[in-house]
Length: 182
Image 1 (cartoon, rainbow, N blue to C red):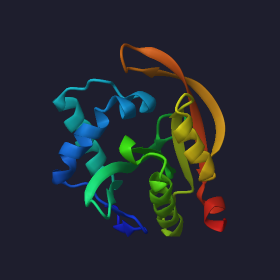
Image 2: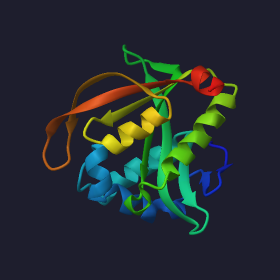
Image 3: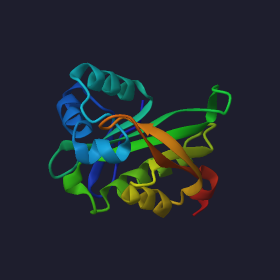
Image 4: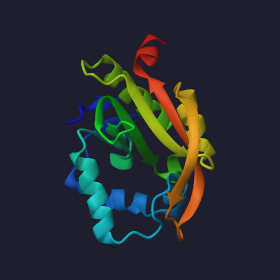
């Protein structure tokens, strides 16, 4: 289970049952679902599956703004799989989203910086954080680059927004050892 982290403006804590309504509102918001490649109109059963999976992931965080004391986003570090499809405990895959009303305020950068610092300091085999980002999601790609992620390639990704389409997706990598030293 994720530890509770605090920043100047945010609490980062494990997701709870009471977070589900806000989580559902956010993942079904087209401003979030389109740029992240989520299906645009998931039914309640699908959203509950996503939510339960995110809650069961050991490193999942509710992003809570101090002054409002409510969930405005999530950060999840998913299990990483190597090229053969086997789990690789030296890597994690980063996923995140933030309520659009709070974009452009540096909140996700603040939250991710705290999470990455905590991961860097932990005694674990994790050395690399991976992230996939639709190339069209320029805001998210810039955020990852600001946090020292390096783009190492791109590929076509099936996106199920409003019918299945192929979109370019960047693969980014962060070496935690480098991050820890900078």
